[in-house]
Length: 179
Image (cartoon, rainbow, N blue to C red; front, side, top):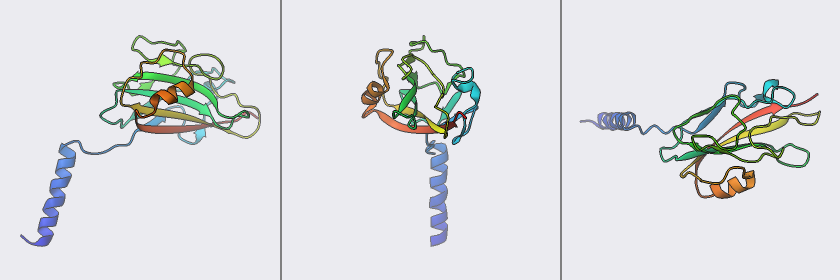
């Protein structure tokens, strides 16, 4: 067998083993049907509209994922980072949050919600002061455990509990401004 044939055979074996073995590595990816990354968040999902959470979907979670957590915040707020949503202990078998996710602090499947900076649980949409657009970061974390934290915690408490347990993270950035 010539050198070129050997290289071709080795490459073929690698490709077959990756495809058959499920070795294709896919990064965690977060999307919304309501807006694309870097696009404007529709009024429906803001404090000027119905103030309902957007539908979010994700794929490509690492195999060892036991749960997910999601934080939505606005780093452009006048007083610094403003938290719009804290939700955690999302079971690993889920790959979406439906539009208008209930604001209740505890779901039957174990999902819990923390306090946002409006002093409530659940999602509260953008309502920046008039002027330049603000960025809203939806940050999804794939975790190697179920945190088991109580309902109603803060973003800071969630971030502290996630330390050392984040397998992968994905971001979706939406924009919004009031004229």
